[in-house]
Length: 152
Image: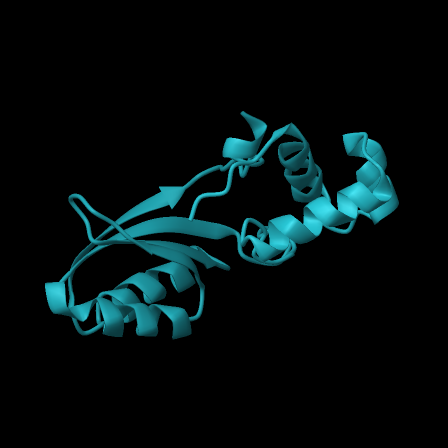
């Protein structure tokens, strides 16, 4: 179900994306509504599933994960469930998505160094039952940006 967002909703999401720990008073001041109105909007966004949870943004380099890569997997058609379970349990796998196109799965790996990344790809990903092939792209630099739709 798609929720229609207005300008106040978008401003609330933008502010919380920048700092998810804002007090209700500060949030209300920044989006120019009363605290009660900001609280009601926030509760509505949460109950509608627009806001799934509050989390932190990690500086991966500062946390010791200096090497990142996207790894595309081609998998057997019947192996998505087992591959996704294995990826959830695999150390250094930050994110993965099922795709349509030339590859079936895109995996974001964040590792402390190239040696660990090599081990994750060659000994971990390529050895998963159902994985037919992989292709790896090293990430030299990244910009994690802000919100997608809400800042438009």
